[in-house]
Image (cartoon, rainbow, N blue to C red; front, side, top):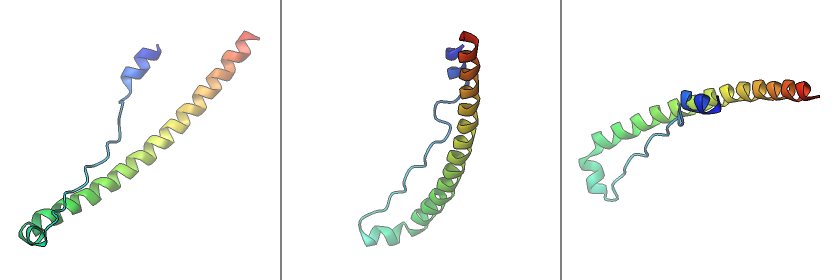
Length: 80
């Protein structure tokens, strides 16, 4: 049953976004300004989504841990 539960839930539901590349030379920054700006704007959006996902996953896991703790209590009571 534990193996079934482990395979039913995603291993990494919240994947952090890749940090955008920033060239070291000012010339390249100017040359690729539109691409770089777009990469950073996309990153900011994705990192906000990532933080929301982490918050949701934390809440979900908290509820799951509470339920598991209650199950364990019932298990302990059944053994007495």
